[in-house]
Amino acid sequence: METSAPTLTLPRTRGRGKVSKRTIVIATAAAVVVGAAGVFLAPARNTAAAPKPQAPQPSITVDVVVPAATTFARNLAATGTVRARDELVIGSDASGVRLLEVLVDVGSTVQRGQLLARGDDATLQAQLAQQDAQIRQAQAELTQARANVERSERIRDSGVYSIEALQTRQTNAEAAAAKLELARALRRELEVRIAQTRVVAPANGVISKKMATVGGVVQPGNELFRLIRDGQIEWLAELPSHSIARVQPGTKARVTLDDGDSVDATVRMVAPTIDAATRNGLVYATLPAGTRLKPGALAKGELLLADAQAFALPETSVLTRDGYPFVFIVGRDGLARLTRIETGSRQRGMVEVMGLSGDARVVTTGAGFVKDGDLVRLASDPAQPQQATTEPARAAGDQS
Image 1 (spheres, helix red, strand yellow):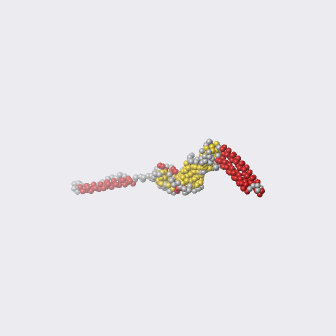
Image 2: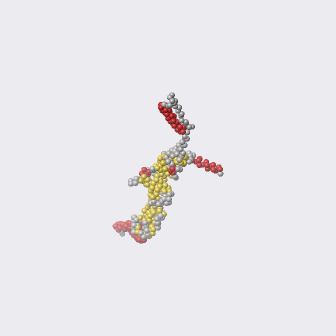
Image 3: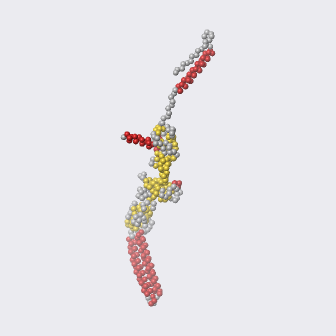
């Protein structure tokens, strides 16, 4: 509606129809006031008729999940060396004997008492034959001496032999017996020296090292072979002093192979001391027979202490900012808030989280595109994820 300007009627003066100056000023002031009122009233009417502002719209659609109760293993990661549990050093006490045969090689599985190498014993066999002859001679001398003593005893009262002669014959018999014993002892010594030319396995196991060669001269103290007793090897895991106290004999362990597979082990012993230089202690875990790990290898693994229940989230929902883990939590108002959390163990694509309630709605898909305070749209209801996915499938089955 248009507003017309007010019309002012000026009073006429008594004389000749002229208007006075005072009347003109009053009329002008009234016109200004009326115009200003019109100017101020018009915007008020336009403002009242303006449309209402629209509500903010979500900027992105995201998937959310709630923390799930998951069983996590409380493990201790460790690195250690694989070595033989008992590695026996095999040598010979023979002196100056040349090896004629070496019957085993590295990796050979041997049994206790099995012949590993044979030395030249020809000289010792000849000495043994000589000793056998000396034994027979000593036996003959002893037989003669005893016979002389027996005859002397029978005619002792006849006066043919003096007491001195009788004592001499008894002494000769005792000397002959001692000579025979000495000859037999020397023979046993030769048998031991001959046995030393035969290198045999002291226990069941696997040959891990071989220094013996055909033609080599054996000397006392020389190492000829090394044997892993019963083929048993173990993993020596290094743990810091504050963690090793949590490990006990019988604890299960898992050692990782180079190809990603793992083998199970059992803790045999925990070292009673801590290394003063590294402040680490050793845990001895026995590996199963036939494992592909070899002594001397460096292997990683973990010690399985116990299982515990904890909340877990998919690893894709956890973001790292400045070295700290964060997640986006969607509130009831639809706003995504960046929240710092604490993380723990990881397994099968899930990460243990602490500091979240069980009903927190955490952004998964699209978390990398969300900013703190963004208004988001939920692709599904995290409170009923199965119902939202199974009902369409059931409906489709009914139609078919």
